Image: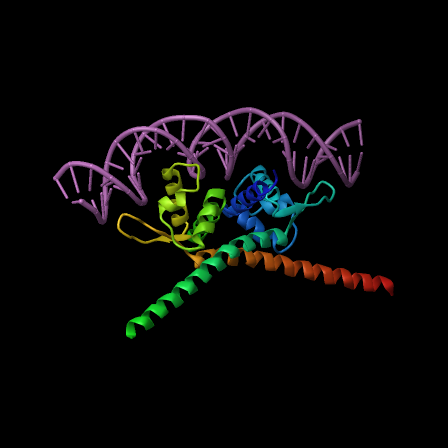
Length: 116
Length: 116
DNA sequence: GAGTTGATAAAGCGATAGGTTGATTATGGG
DNA sequence: CCCATAATCAACCTATCGCTTTATCAACTC
């Protein structure tokens, strides 16, 4: 075990974490620097507990890490975790683009053949 | 309307579409070329209707498009849709990395100050 | 036009995501 | 020690997700 299923679970959690406007807004905020739960919750028309849950989702997905400063537990965005996601997407985007180019040149070849 | 809420909804759908191992496998398959529902469903221990639903999720998210060929409705991966997602992620990843570098050079400056 | 094949629609079901409120746990200050 | 602050836990509710089975639609074949 732990072969690829864990990776799959991790991708599940990471992409699911991005599939929510509140969590994306949290990420946007955290990209500009660390912040506490209270700071993160302030702009939202939502209970602090609700935001705290969103933060836990982001943490479980590995997209953010947390430190400690007295009672506060500041959140930090992890760029490497984001990069892992773009890497996954790009694998298949690039493959698809390669296939398209292959098809294009095939059609070009066929068109040349017709002219003869 | 249509200001930014639609974009948010679109990102919701797109990232949610990626947050499932079956749908990611479908994307992986489609990156190597178009395929019909039957072809896509074949490798899965799941009803064809189940796979069809997954495909509809991918289509609603704009990640794939569909054409028509007799009774078949082949699926095609849309690389541009994938690129839009990496673009969103990279916006915040790059910003976060910029902030880290800024912090690093600040700490470097402070260390130099101490030496004096 | 009757049958066949590819794909979807509809309805139902268990699991879980996302939100609330109220109680509880740390940590620090006076 | 007592109190305030930061954050989480626990229980609960509703909506949605993922999947199944049954029935239906759409396009071709003979």
